[in-house]
Length: 126
Image (tube, rainbow, N blue to C red; front, side):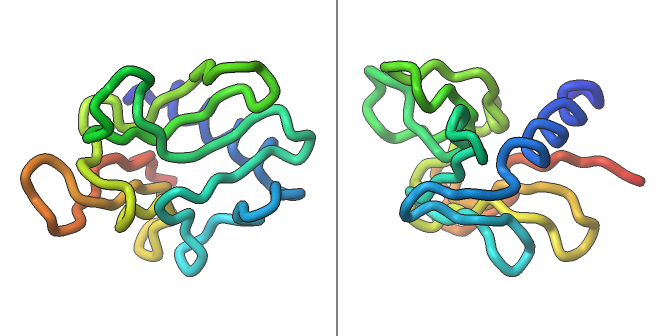
């Protein structure tokens, strides 16, 4: 992922997903408070939603981290994090801030593996 794309996502996430969660949604994201499984984060004004999703029309065996417009009918995806490495299940997946280096990371089972692995990371160094 390019540095510009990652920086754009991180700015969007910080500005839009900082407060005012929807019912059942996480208020913040941290190493100790990840976004798990089918939970979502909704932007403060309710315009965007961040969560794991399975593409429409798929068999439901591939899951991606994405951001889409919350108020537009249908799911208009505007960003996908792990496009090259889909998760094989959502129940044990976590989107979190790494306690080691502060990067955003998506952890879960991928491919034939049932053990959680990091499938996507913002991979920034400061």
